[in-house]
Length: 251
Image (cartoon, rainbow, N blue to C red; front, side, top):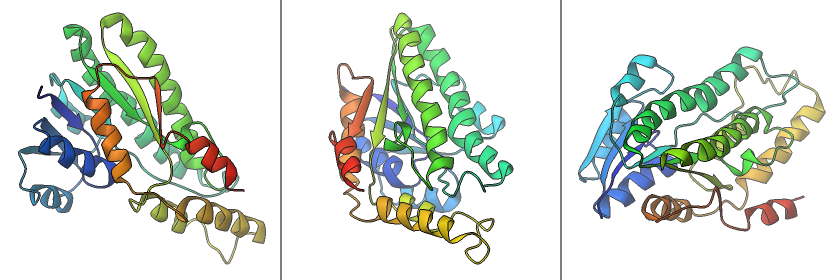
């Protein structure tokens, strides 16, 4: 049965792949992107996808989804950030929380209100292996995903009372370019010539941990499709299923 599906952050990575895969399966997909370039790339897929330019951190942009009656919502948009948490400027850290936590919660609330009234629907919160693990160099990002993990678990319990299903998806390191961008460019505040050798070693460790041996992102896209179409879901969905064991072995 065809479903109406909204995906934020569909201009790249898992969101783009999922939008295409779900549209090919006959679902009515609404894909939000950040800019014209992403919109053009998605439109070139020549699929019946409704494309909306939307920055989840802007209230006026989020208002575009007010009253949307969708069957499935993927809270997928996110910002990557690495670097030593003892050094990262608070304003920079606050920006990551603004995107990955506060804006994500805000747009999810808007969709949830409609689902509560209808007493049906599914919300998929895109977390990460970083939602349950943290290590040196990854703190700024994993802190936000730990928060999102708690949000998703609490929301699942609360919205079950209204007949609305909520679940989390926790991908490991996949080759979408997201991990590479995070690991290779913490930002202008992190100057390799000014930080301590220990900080450089920590970032090198992180780089190898999340960029070497990355997996095929199609595996995650397939899981998005499964979660959109499933009769019911588990609260937490690791991809691959044994990612915790795999990451523990990378020492």
